[in-house]
Length: 396
Picture 1 (cartoon, one colour):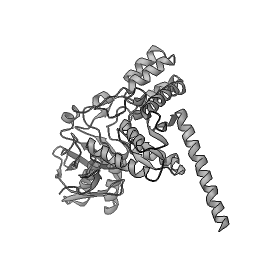
Picture 2 (cartoon, one colour; picture 1 turned 45 degrees about the vertical axis):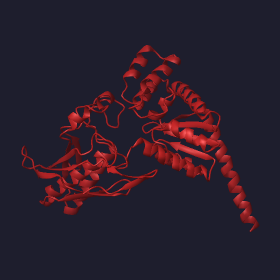
Picture 3 (tube, rainbow, N blue to C red; picture 1 turned 180 degrees about the vertical axis):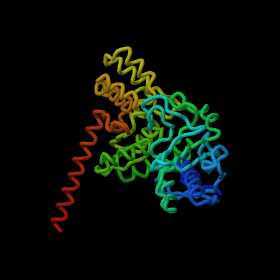
Picture 4 (cartoon, rainbow, N blue to C red; picture 1 turned 135 degrees about the vertical axis):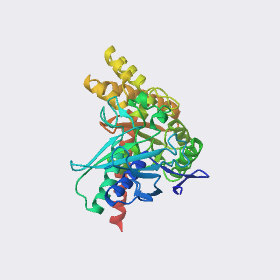
């Protein structure tokens, strides 16, 4: 039974899939059902962060050969129309009762371990990110409540083919060794056909242009949450997700005649723009460490710090190193000046463009000079519109 949830990309209808995080939670739910209820479930289900229901058949379920008190359940991942090396992999959850209260989650065979700082999990932990961990815990707790079990449960997530498949990913370079990461923020995998994505972005930008000369671009879900949390929505400016296609989105904005554009993105994406990288997908180019290193050197950073920056696993890890050296502000200002130059060059004078960047761990990291001017103009415009509405109300 295929997962039947679709998105429209231009003229194409593409089937979505679900993340390894959802798979782990589903498998854990099935194993909990068998452990506490004594029956092997034929299927498992949950509702994702986006409110979309996923109901799929169980692939396997049984008592562990190594421990008769532990049970396991597995499901198969469905990536939909997305080109993903993890499509079709088996994700397994092994559950057992434990004396400690609560749900205790770890990774087993085929799930990587974190070896470098700066990732979602601390060094030594299984590479099961925070949102999937919560999904797994919620799924198991729901079954515990159903059967009135108040005690503790140990959950071990494994991926039988994970070690082999991880060799096809960037995990080792990022600092995840021995297997795959359990990922996902929304629970749903939207197809990543490049042309389909470009078509969708173009349609969205064209629709916005019909009603507004102002636009906010953001690569994805992190940016959307940042815009919400920082109340950037108060300006009333439409938001379009541009994925990794930042250069293409700017070209589209120019073609549609926008006056002002703000780019709001995670530092892991936006730092690449400082090097002129306008498609920020890792398969095209990276350069994050090199940008941090170069600008730190320009700001007088010591050789030892530059070497550490080149070895850092993530942009967040680079920020931590700059904080330790008390050079974050100086280096970020330098990077943001470079980002502004690159964006202005790509816009070619067609519109005013600025950028604001953030980290999930450190919050707002800074904004370009034009970003501040653009948001100030939007604020003034908002006040003017509010005053006009008040005047019209008074006249009535």
